[in-house]
Image (spheres, rainbow, N blue to C red):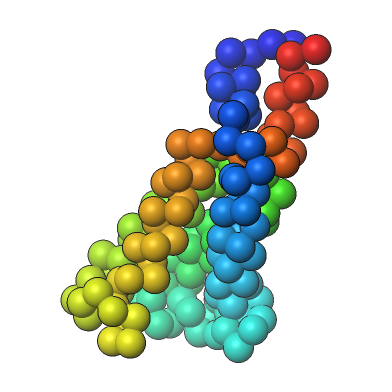
Length: 149
């Protein structure tokens, strides 16, 4: 089966550099999502994160926590594996835009003031991954080769 859209989605000429970017970004996002979803790593879980999100005007808070946590956790795992790298990066990038605009922008740039510098850095890295794809060391690459045989 050779689907042009699926082939374009999975194929990448990025080489191993994509893995070097994907691995830490995927781990970081998955850990942040696990905080929101499962209360791991000192997180507040869905209830606590949902209450906080509702308190800043993101309602319904529980649903917003579920969406943000899922985008980060599952998107992070997908990035780590290089599985559907481009869609995972786009969804995670959208989540970073929401975080920047709803939480961090009013605090200025620097992280020391809860600013947007870290979320912006993640956003830029995710845009790069959305453009370049999973690279040679990814499940996307394995699937792409199978599709073209």
